[in-house]
Length: 138
Image (cartoon, rainbow, N blue to C red; front, side, top):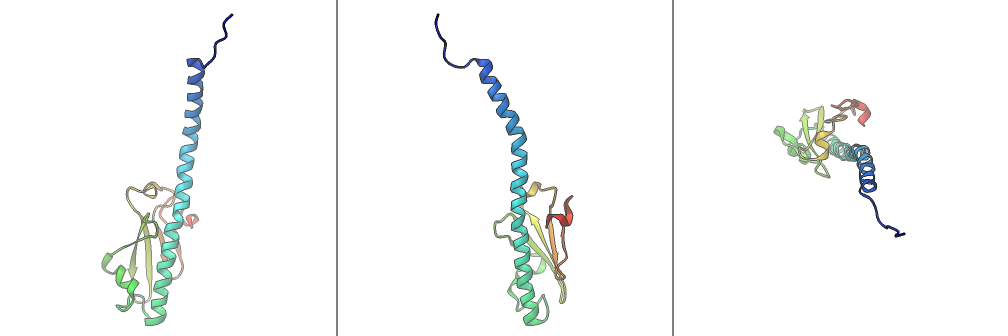
C-alpha cells in the first residue's frame, strides 16, 4: 500500500473559501478603524487653527486682522492642509466670530467617511460633523 502526501484540490478550495470569508468580514472593519483613527487629523488641525485664531483675537481684538498670519492664510476662501493632508481647513472669518470647516480630501480614505464627513468648529467651541454620527464624531 502506497501512502500519499499532499493536499487534495477540495482541501485547498476549502482553505481558500475560509480565507475569503474572513477577509470579507475583516477588511471593511479594518477600513472603518482606519477612518476613525484618521479623524484625529481633522480634530487636531481644527483645534490648532482655532487656537491660532484665538491668539490673534487676544492680540488684535479681531479674528480677521490683516496682521494675523493664520487669518490671512484663510481669507477669501483659501484653505490650508491638515497635518496628514487628509483634510483641508477653510474658514468663515468675521471680526468677532469664526467657523472652521475640515473637508476630506478626494482620493483619500476619509473621502468615503459617511459617518462623519465634514467637521466644524466655531469660536464658541461648538463642534459639529456632517455625517450620520454628527457631534458623536468628536
